[in-house]
Every structure is written in structure tokens, then in C-alpha cells.
Image 1 (spheres, rainbow, N blue to C red):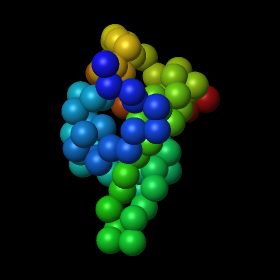
Image 2: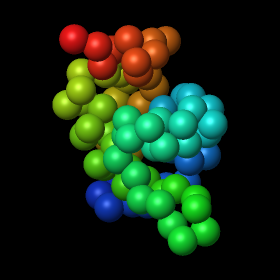
Image 3: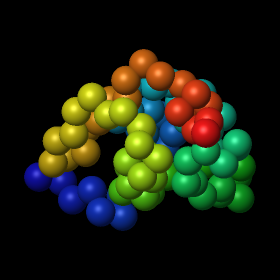
Amino acid sequence: MKDTKNQLLTAGELGDILDISSGTIIKWAKEGKIPSFKLPNKRFIFDQQKVLDYLEKKRFRIKSFSPNCQVSLCACKMASTRSG
């Protein structure tokens, strides 16, 4: 089993895990909606565990969660779940 603690991911890899587009991941990172690190080359990287913990804390509806952190978000928009 792969250790997911402190695993750094690209927008594409995180998008695959969350079942959303890398473009949406980048948009959320630029808007500060998910934890990210901006590299000198202007690309973003993501700490997988920090993002998953953040999404859980914000009560995003997650379809499934397995030990290897393969999760999928339900069809819902971040903006609608953040209001309130």
C-alpha cells in the first residue's frame, strides 16, 4: 500500500483522485479554495492529505473513501457548499 502522508500531487493527479478536471483544481487553487503551493514556475502542487483533510473539514460530500485515498466528490460545486 502506498503511503499517502505528505504525498505531493500535480493538479492532474489530484483531479484524478477527486474525479474532477485539473482545470477546476487550478481554479480552486488560484481562488484559495483548496490548500496548495505555488512553484517558481507558476505551477501548483498539492499535499494530498492536507487537501483531503480540508475538504472533509469543509464538509464536502465525498462518495467514497478508501485507505489509498481514492475519493470522489459528489456532483456539487464548491461555491454552493461554502455559502453560509
